[in-house]
Length: 70
Length: 260
Image 1: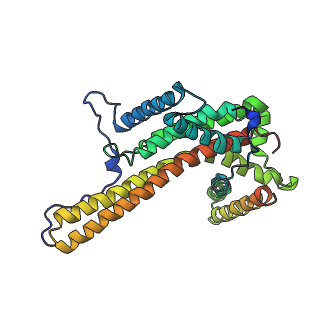
Image 2 (image 1 turned 90 degrees about the vertical axis):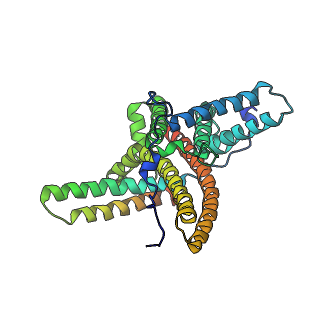
Image 3 (image 1 turned 180 degrees about the horizontal axis):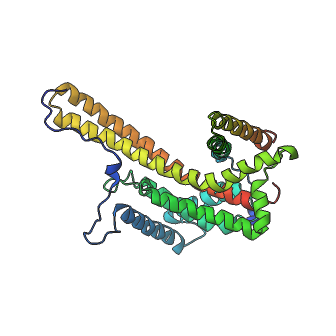
């Protein structure tokens, strides 16, 4: 069982969906968190949902660049 | 309210997972510890037996051992890490896969019937171990700053968008990954076990304590459903062991990948 005799491997993509999910959670967490912090700081109430939407949108954009082109 | 009900039905809940010590006085030796210890003994026995009399024409045990090992080696480790430097990680991935698999399937084995990873501490430790390993191999290969850059600069994103993407990449690669690894495993095992408990205990209660033939009939159907769910759970247990190891391998692969 030498490494040379191995057939050419096909990339295992069975975890990609879960990785995409962790990107989505991460994007919403960070930009939602920024919105939440700004809300607390400025005394406003609309920045948390705005941050969540921006985070989700940016994450989808990034997933497009990352997975959508190959 | 049903006539003739004498005792209240106590639904299963998180308290169903509170395992008392098996021997009084030995506080740490609970059921999950017992199941995990047994699983390690079985794994060692299995692979020792499979490799002890390794022959060119394999026997049954050796064949089964090679089948399991080759599955992790080829379709998880090599395909996710790449054929250049995957061999280093095969022992860890193989051990991890069979440890999680046996501890999950323990929820289905009669008389044991307890998934170790339904106690979240076990899932945390497994995820932290994978987290430390993929970060460590990445830092070892690229240096601290190089690895940090590698994990925070997403590929293919135009330069003007970079500042907005770096926080997302950092959070999802460093923080969300270990949390989602552990929570996915824990929640699947916990929910599957509690679902089975609801159907089995509910069916038993309806048959024995409802005092009504019609409800007893429903109880029989409930027990049959429990059987079907047990089959589904066996599938989920295998899938969860597989996905945990596949993701670990992919994280290692992306941490040491040259191009990004």
